[in-house]
Structure formats: structure tokens, C-alpha cells
Image 1 (tube, one colour):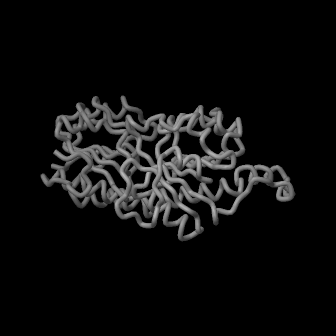
Image 2 (cartoon, rainbow, N blue to C red):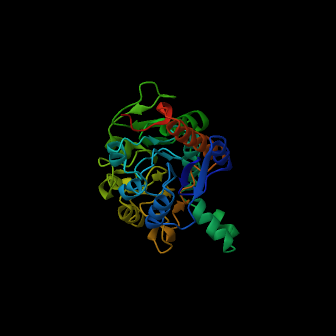
Image 3 (tube, rainbow, N blue to C red):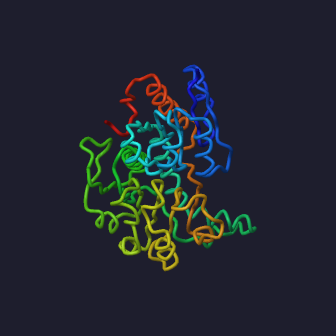
Length: 320
């Protein structure tokens, strides 16, 4: 009898091949499915595994199948999974640590570059026919010689630091409650407030957890230079989005590049959409071909190991 795996979003073909070779049937939830739809699919099929990306995996979903043996995520942030409940049920949660690190880091650099040249504004003006916008353009910068401040110096932050320092000659400073012992490149560690005060570009790489949710608020934005830019490719709820909008409108900071949001998809009437000093991308920092394939294979291997009675040690986020 085949094992049943519910994929909450469409899985890359490489994952389907892995599942097929492991004698597993992949059931893909229809686009637009919500929690109640997932619960019905889990219950009706009594699935053995749940494969997710950013959709929430709730207590009710976990309880909907008596056969559930493993949950696995194509990604790294585990804030969308009820980890405490899964652990209480002795259900391993797989993930893909490091699988998307390079892609997310490169995306952060992309947003920095776009902010530095006021890409959003220039693109809009050109599309209106204003080719001469270049003659009146102010507030654009080279990255070379600027100071990059990292809030979070884990895998992704360190790759950002490497690209920024070795590629652009930026000075890199950083804050992390657990500083890396052997970073890829030197990072001058200091307090979070000092990073905010000194940096020309702030790149956020902190996970969503009780101690970080809404920790970057209006007071924090006011610590930044009026010429500084804020980049977020981490998690939307780490910042107070209304405070970011206020800081941008009041010119407390020069601009922002944002890939993640507290509410996704971002409503089209959200104030961030209207600002010409904000570059927006729809949570696409980890969607390169390489990232998707690495994260898919890591997450699928966790499922295969768990279904075959092995402990998915390499990629298991909760250890028993």
C-alpha cells in the first residue's frame, strides 16, 4: 500500500520523482485552499505526511489523520507550523536548513541595489514618458564604501555579508544574540541599536519568534539615518508594518525593500504599495530554480526517512 503525502502547494517535479520512487502518492491541494480545505483533505485521505511551504500547519490539521507520521517544510522558517503540538505528538518536522540561503541572500542584495538607485521611482517615471528623470534624480548611491548593518548573522546574513564586503567593498556590522563563531567574513558585532544608528543599509535576517515579533518598531526606525534603507527578506511580523510606513512617510528613513509581509498576499490597497521609495517583491527570495530544488529534495528526504522508520536527523527541526 502506498503512503499518502499531502502537498499544501504544488511540489517541484523533482519531489514528485522522489516520492514516486519511494512508493508514495502525492495529493496536491487545489490552488486557493484554506485551512478548512486542508483539514478535509487530510481527514478524507488519512495522509501519512504533510508537505508545506508557507501555509499554516495547525493542531487541527495534525489531528485530522491518525496515520500522520511526519510534517516537512520546503524552507527554513518554521513559524507556520505548530511545532509544540507536533513535538507533543512525537511527529518529526522536517525542513531544509541552508537550502535557500544563497538565493535569499542574493535577493537581499538585489533589493539593496534597487533601493540605492531609487529603481521603483525611476522605473515609474520612465513608464510615464519622463526619460529626463535622470537630470533631476537625487538621493542615489553606490554600495561601495557604504556600511551594511545585519540584524541576524546566521547562514543568510553571513552570505549577504560576504557578497557585500567582497563584491562591493562595504563595511559590515551586525547584531545577533548568538554571534557566529566562525563567520564567512569578518562582521563587527555590536548592539542592535548601534547597528541601526550606524548603517546605511539595514538587512533583516531574524526568525519570527516570541522575542522578535514586532520588535522592529517606529522607535527603531527613528534610530536609523534619514538616508538609510531598510531591507526585509526574513519574516513580515518581525517589524511593525504601520510603523515602517510612518517612518517612510515622515522621511525618517530614505526607503525600503520588502519581500515578506505580515499578511500575505499583501492587499493592493496596502500603503506600502503606493510609496515610490519602496521596492516590493511577493515573497520570491527563495524561488530560484536552485533553491527550490535543494529545499524540495531536503524536505522530501525527511519524509522518506520518517516513513521508512528512520530518524531524519539531518533535516529534522524537532528532536525527541
